[in-house]
Each structure stands twice: as C-alpha cells, then as structure tokens.
Length: 261
Image (cartoon, rainbow, N blue to C red):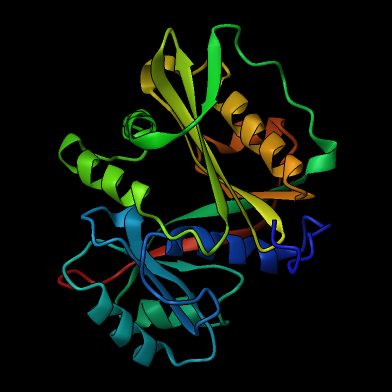
C-alpha cells in the first residue's frame, strides 16, 4: 500500500471508500484522475457496467451532463450518484430525463474483525496470473455480470490492460475440479481494500463459494495493511456479505440517460 495513504480505521469514513470505487472503475479508462469534478470512466465496450459517470462535484449538472453525454456517446452507460456527489445531482438528472434503474448499498467491515466460514472442501482459490488466468477469470464471472460470449475476448483484453497507477488490484479465481467457477478481486487503494467482481457460475451457487472468494479477498486486503474493507452489493450478494460482518454505511443510486444518448 502507498504509505502516503493513511489506512481508514472506521467503516463510516465514506470518502476513502468512494475514492477506491472511482479508482477501480477508472482503471478501465476515462478521466485522468479520481479527483476531477466530473469523473467519467470509459472502457469503450458495449456493456453498461463498463462505462459511466462516477462523481460530479462543484460543477453544474446540465454542463457536466452534456460533457458526459459527449464522452460516452454510442455506448451503454450509467450515472452513479453516491455520497461523494454534490447534493441535488439526482434531482437534476431526473429533470434532464434520466431514469433511476436501481441502487446498491455500500457496505463495509473492519478487517480486524474478520470471521469467515471454512471454504467448501472441493474449492481451490488461486491468484490470477498471466493471460490464461485472465481468460479463466473473465469466463468465470461472465454469467454473473452479463458479459456475453461475443464480448468476452474484448473484456479479457481490457482486463489485461487496466491502469495500474490507481492502486494494486489482485484477482482471484475459484476452481472446482479444475474448472474456474467463481471470482473476486480486491483493490488496495486510498487506504482501504475494495472488493469487486464477486461472482459464481449459476450451476455452482448455494455452496458458500461466493462467501469463500469474498473472504479470501478480505484476507489479502488485511495482509496489505487495510483496516477497512468496502464493496457495493447486489441483491443476491448482500445477505452473503452480511454474514461475513459487512454493514451498510451508505448507498449509490444508478441512473440511465434518456434514450437516444
């Protein structure tokens, strides 16, 4: 971990958690810095999760929206409105014709309180290394995140060329009988450990595999000096994270631009 970044000690310290989120997605491309007034991430891929706006601060919504709409033209994308955005952004977006399409709780846990159940006996968790590992990693999370077969090769290429100046990203893959069936990743950045890409192939769900991959990412975060672990939860994942000790500390709401943009 960058020693210039003090480790966050409280799960209620939201600022470093949101900075970690921005660092994670900005690694796919877009704005130069996570501190810009309008933080846009842009992979250029035709997938709504891989392009969007992460924060708006200190700038008018109409001006910023016009800028974002130009940068993200012809791509599916989302506007994330979280606690690091200015008050009133959501209302201004709705007035501009944006529609709310869901929300995710921001959850956090102190890593010195980590208590994880033992993983399934047949599960082997490995760090992702090399091109073959990235291919298996994307293949394992594809069904959980709606990455179609025709897009997978492009996502593998993008994963292999993420920015590395915004934090240290460690990817994990879980294997059953040699097959890659689950994933997680942990980003050590801005004084916290951020967990991302927790997914399990539908055939293997309900066995505690997702919890095991999450816990493995948390252990790595603690090994790298982080005291707080943060993530954004799906409806499917939230109960799993609660059992691992995570608590909701805030929320991010997702907005879709008007059709035709």
